[in-house]
Length: 228
View: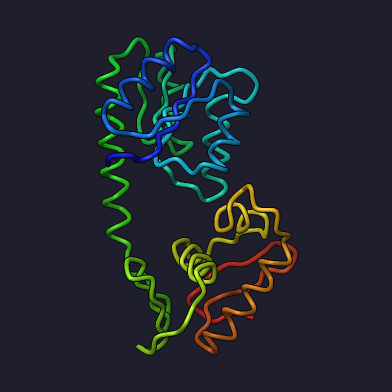
């Protein structure tokens, strides 16, 4: 886990500094943010492995940051930190997709331990889904290989990432903007037309086995029945 990037978001500098210190000592690469808006920008550009996220942030609060992440298909582990110990807050946070919930005051060592647990769980989920299959199309994410009926198909790095992302979320429709955000990165300056071009290239390479479906006026999805 050494050198994995961790984002600490808290509007209290003393708390952010202490957590940053302990996480750095544990071997993580740490960045901090003091508002929800700043955190959102860092998440989009830096791609942390986990986020320690204060709920009570100025402007955009932590729950909204987490909600936006999950809506964009970003399942990076999120550990909520809050001074409130209300059951409703905790349930809301977990329903928004948080992986853990820590009430202030807390021990920095406990936060480090919980971050490590969240990362191990995330790694386990990734390893469990290294092999993806939809119809005749199979993906080996570890080897970054795509095959149709056992025959390997040449893919560019972006084509592979786009196909893998859609197969990871079967039957879920993503807009072009969402695909740009997750596959190309939020800081990417490319336009939505780029998504259409890459979908067309994937369909050409996968042929009749392509599981990619166009949802007119919305975006794209991957489904077990080949789409148009």
